[in-house]
Image (cartoon, rainbow, N blue to C red):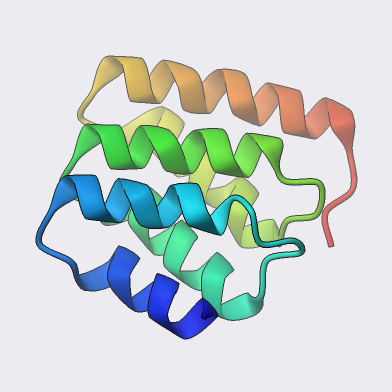
Length: 103
């Protein structure tokens, strides 16, 4: 299931389908390395702002996350082309730094 979700997130041509994959990924705990890699890549490079925004929310809500996820939030906070996504990433980065441990 993780491989299918990761491939869908990385490759599907529909923004809605990629966003739905993120929704489903949110129910997988803990996230596997395969899923984390796909989530981090989508946060940095997905063409749709709504998908990148969903990534930010998912990372913020994750109880255990790899250091790459925090680095992705920092990158998004500085470089995302959509101001609301940048602001959400900045707020999420502050929140996850307060709540603590990564995996």
